[in-house]
Amino acid sequence: MRRLFFDVTRVAPFLRSERGALQLGTLRGVEAMTSGPGLALADRLSTGASLSDFQAAGSTILRWRARGCTVIGMHSPGATWEVVDLERAVLRDVAAPDCHLSLVSLREATLVDADLSGSRLVLCDLGGATLQRVVLDGCRLNGCDATGAVFDGVSLANADLRGTVLRGAWLIGTDLGSADVRGADLRQAALGAEQRADLKRRGARVGGGWLYRAWARLLGATARPERHARARAAVTATWAALAILVPVVFFTRAALHPVNPEEPPFWEGVYEEPMDEPEGEPAPEQ
Image (cartoon, rainbow, N blue to C red; front, side, top):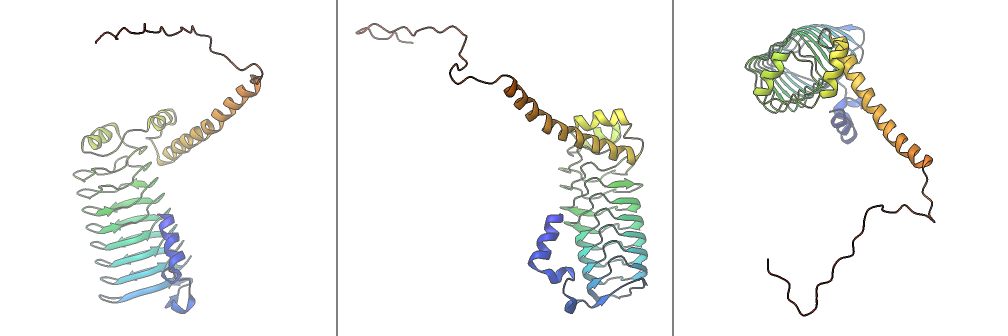
């Protein structure tokens, strides 16, 4: 997902508000953004800003760069968000049902007390995000990446999660009832035993995390999201150590037992000469 946003910036930098002539406004400090049905907010730069009382019901928000900003109070039902960068942002008290979010980055962002029910998210990045008391009932997550995200008190009832990447996410206690999880990647996700069995039965990919499960049992990763993050870090460290150790052992063994080119190693088995068939006699038929 980050690569996709980089390509967008490289090919068309004005889409990310990098040309001052195309910026309609720059927000600093504490501001209020207000729009209305059918209106559009485009090419806004709000990096690090603090916004309050964001009214954008039915509006279209295009190319908004608000990385690291804080938004308290947002009312934007039925709005359209396209190419929006909210990485590491903090959003609280969000009422945005029935929205369309396309190419929206919420990577490592914090979303608290939000209602996004009935919305459609297309190619959105939720990697490492923290969602607390968020309603995503009936949402469609098409091509979204929520790797390592924390879902705390999140409802995903009747959501369409087909093909969604939730690898390594914290999903303990998350309501996934009646959600369509066919093909969803839930490997290394923190799940209860009953959750895991139910999701596997319904077509989700929950296998392949044997090393994570070993560290999870050792560290008690199902107790708190912080321990889950430690277990994932331990898995990464384990594979990194193996990637370094295997070639070290190989080359150490080669150094301790060098091969003499004048006396190459030989095969110690028994070699038998093949028996020649007598000339003139046909080979027996099988």
